Image 1: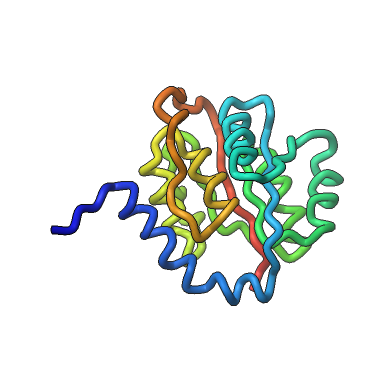
Image 2: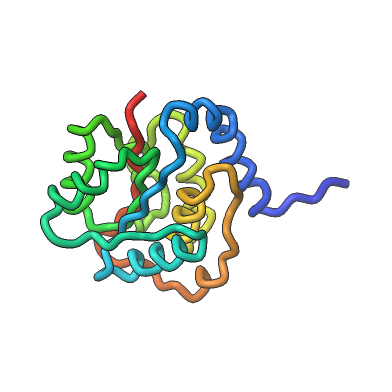
Length: 177
């Protein structure tokens, strides 16, 4: 008898499409990942803590958003993941688009899933994993950004997390092509 938990099934759903193209992706874009967060948001702080736990160095979104984004893009990261308000997402995504990046996925903090066609092909699994993670969607997004091949993170803080109020979004930007 094969036993599968929701965590292993959903972790596999994320890993299979990601693994299939990961080698080619790394060859073209490298492995640098950047995590950005709004420190004024509880979801942003949870995302930053989860990123630190995954061995990444999350950066707070601060100051002039255009200059900040251009500084982040100067290193040409392979993936930029963030948790912010809608206005910051719009500004950052617009500057990133000028530099050759595309919004691959947008997660609505209230629905914890890809919203309204904002997941490019191949990124819907991230939305399913975030939805399955419930209030731990920020931790799931940070774990994905740290290692797209991995499964779901331990959800120790997810049970105690409150729903995110207002327009809080998680998002992923990747180079076009």
